[in-house]
Length: 221
Ligand SMILES: *Cc1c(COP(=O)(O)O)cnc(C)c1O
Figure (cartoon, rainbow, N blue to C red):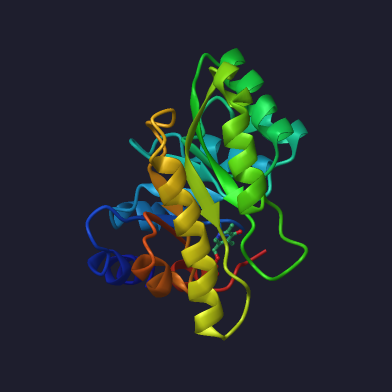
């Protein structure tokens, strides 16, 4: 089942688009199954859960862990030694903490700025204007432990596909403008698209889709 879903999705991915298999709340055995099917990038959204799985699955060569959810500053230390990409940096304060923990671990961690483009009030992230101001401020330049690698966004949770497409378009427009800046040579990833909207996300330029339910089924605990 898991292998079949992964193959079905990856077969449809255009060149330059990668799949993050979102394994949060699914057991290590499910991840082993996905790995055996060739999947290498896994997304988790709780630092302690990721830390446990990272330990439990240390034998899997070449596995890459992405942190995709809201990250609390006091949890960064648990994941800084090994995380490959942090998708949802939603404040300058969090970026500064990632920088600190990355330097402690002797690393430079690629990070995506989470853009708030959805209708919901509750979602975390920078508005496009805030993100633009933050980039222009240049304050991230001193942070040698982090690399601004692009943007992550979630669309409004709705059946209205026009609205979803519109949200993704706003994220893409921001991403394209920012990636033109000579100051941001690593700004290459546009993380958008989940189980219900990834086809639209790809049409709108996504480079990383984050899919959980379609691959692993309903979350187990
Ligand atoms: C859980 C989660 C996903 C995966 O969602 P599905 O609908 O299960 O595919 C993607 N992105 C983020 C940030 C998540 O928290």
